[in-house]
Every structure is written in C-alpha cells, then in structure tokens.
Image (cartoon, rainbow, N blue to C red; front, side, top):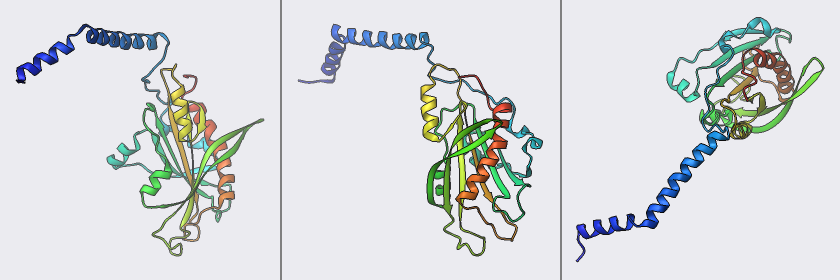
Length: 258
C-alpha cells in the first residue's frame, strides 16, 4: 500500500544515492570554477556606470555657431522619463542662421540621450513614433560624411519618414516628415544592432556607454510647418553633425575606457 510516508522515504533514498550526490557536487564545482575562470580572464559580465565628462545641459551654445538655441524643452512627466530610461538628455530647438528664412532646414529639433549603464535595449524612433500613432513610410540606413580639417568620416545613420494619419497636410502643413538618428556606442556610430554587437563584444572592460543623437528639420515661416526632402535633410544633417559631434566627443562623451 502506497502511503505519504512511503513516498517520502523513497524520494529521500533516491536523492541520497551516491551517483546523485556526485553529480550535484560536480555541478557546484563547475559553477564555482566558471566564476573563478571568468574573473581570472578579466571578463566583466556586469558593467559599472560610466559618467559623462560634463552634463549635457552644460553644452556650450557659443560652440554651435551658426546654430542658435531658440528653445530648451524639459520633460516634466516622470512616466515619460521612466520610459526614456535616463535623465541625462537635452531636447533643444536649433535655428541655422546661415540659411534663408524660408529654408526647410532653418530649424531643427535636437534630442540627445545618454546611458551610463547600457544594459537595456536602446529605444528606437521607429518604434516610439509608431507607438505614438504615426505611420512609418520609409526606414533606411544612410552614411553621412563629416569633415574635420583634412579628415573625413562616415557616420552610419538611420533615415526615417513618418506620416501623421490624423492630418490631411493642408491645415498644419505637409503630413509626412523625416527624422534621423545615430547611436554613439564606445566611440563608434551605428544603429541598434551595432550597439548590441559592440556591447556584447566588450567583455574585457568594466565600462560601456551609448548615446542616441536624434534630429528633425522643419520650418514654419509661412505659418504652416514644412519639412525637407531627402536630399535637403541629408545635406543639412552632414552640416549639423560636423559642428555637433566633435564637441560631444571632445567635451562630453567618455573616451579611452574600452
């Protein structure tokens, strides 16, 4: 007759068998050995925070000429900040005083976020804007050229076009608009896949970071919001990044920690 007492005794007998105890011991030794081996190899499975050299809010506006900061936006909603995943950000509206007042790239919303502990999945505008009710029209990767002295660099950038399905494009202006962004991860530029690859390969450093730089050009000179076409947006983006990225690299983003 099977009773609870018999079942308990049977379980105890099985788990106290020498073969089972040996397996448990080997697993414990292996786990401990792996931990020791990882430490001895200098592999860091958990990163430590890597702070900015200076807060982004201290970005020197005088270094941005011909761009002028005409508006600074602060996120007051804590839920939005929690979703953003960081409080290291700036959200500015820039005005390019070197182009005509009617130019579609006269103004630019400029949004930088910084993550000192990059153990999260980076937010992408592709998902954020669609989640906000916009329709994605075009998503593609483009290479932007920026020149510093005699050096020219290629910056891997995402070019996106969205449409506001709630607008007919007559009252508020054109209903579709481009947005561009790039990630800086440990001194390199790329998309979210590049961020993941770089962080996954960076096993021998205590530190890692990534920062997202996002921008959108527009104008409102006629009382209606207008946006640039692709050619205009890419040319204006190369000009903008030529002024902005060297400042961020030299004075704000960390360097030499990976």
